[in-house]
Length: 128
Image (cartoon, rainbow, N blue to C red):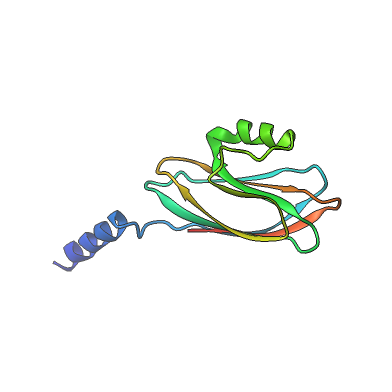
C-alpha cells in the first residue's frame, strides 16, 4: 500500500511541474568580438526562465531566444539592429535580470557578447 502511495505522489508531482529544475551558474570570459551561446532545454512544458548577468565595468548584450532563431538574431546584431526574434534581451548593460517564457518542446539560447571596448567577465545565472 505504501509503495502505491509513493508512486501516486511521484506521478502527481511530476505532472504538476515539480519535475526537473534548471540551475546553471557560471563565469564567462568574453574577449572583444566573442559570442557565447548557452543552449538549454527542451522542457516538457512551458517554463518561465530567469537569466541574470553581471559584468562590472564591461557592458554586454544578453538575449534569450529560440534556438531555431539563432541565425536571425545573429544577423540583426551583426548589422547593429535590435533583434526582433527574442523572448527577452538587452543591447548593452553591466547588470540585468531577464525573464523569458520558453514554450514546451523548445530549446532556448542565452546569447552573450561584449559591447564595450574591453573584455568582459560575466557572472551568469540561469534558473526556472
